[in-house]
Length: 270
Image (tube, rainbow, N blue to C red; front, top):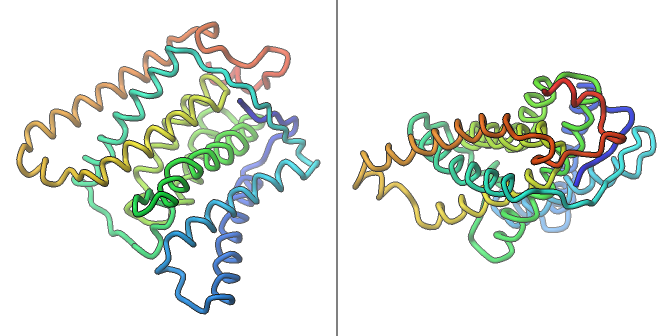
């Protein structure tokens, strides 16, 4: 699955999409406040719904707007090897993020944590774990990163899309982890130019993080700090080894886009 476009985006165009996402948050929260008269920062389900609808709105406007000629190609394309690699690296990233949170604690802003994973109800799990993952990958990798690759190098597109993805999660405590997640999914997209592995990584990451939130790791770290550190170190090894294995996958294994529709900018990633 991928998004096809002929013209691409400039960096200014990518930032305009990000600002449109913010505008959707503000407009949605403002409308809800007018109808309810309540402090919406206290209602995570409403805010995460606004986040989801804002992202969907940006995506739909992008497809409807004929200027940049974005078109979704809904084709499932992922090999077993890619599936296993994406799944294992996503799990490893969750533990590395957990360890990073203990080593480099950042201030948490609960009022801006509506973009994080929530497990308080079935609705919150579906929206924050599943639907948000599909929306964010389609927007930040499928549209923004793909369009940037038409005008810039793979490194610029990867870092820019990861930065915008990080800024779409405004709680400082979330930012380092979301930047790493953006890098991981972006590396897979850069290699395969397909969203299936990105969806798998993001969905696996969110599901594992939700389980980790429910189980908690503080007691385990306090009781077995050496084992905890060994697990984190092992996960770093998995991510490092996975990265180098990813670079060695042949186009036949990766199953990239057909040559006749693959943008020329993909040559910059090899």
